[in-house]
Image: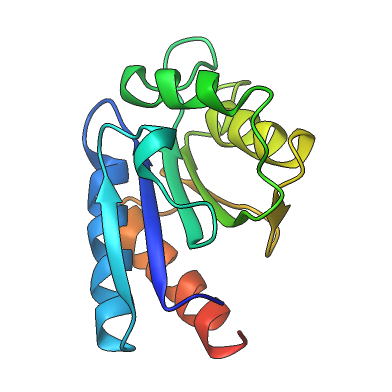
Length: 145
């Protein structure tokens, strides 16, 4: 695992940003460095650093507006050096629960990137403060890395 993490955020209302900030704090506490990308652009994100992608789902299962251009850049990209973790935020009362995160997972794996763990889908109905659940999950990831 690299010592520097690229935290990539897909958000409409800010919840994914809170998750990203909480993950960043956890990384700092463990001695890692990070860059948070609110307007992610593949040209500015190193593929040999570990990626943590925090994204919600918007509308009828789409990615948030701010991460859609990044997702388009992943199509056909060489992601063979990418190791990634995906955290999805969603609401299980919708049949498109975490479709945004699932789309990002698919784009990474279809372009030869590796998911270092199963994606973590957070149901905001069960976890109204999703950053707490995300940090607990990610702390386990770091402890076992």
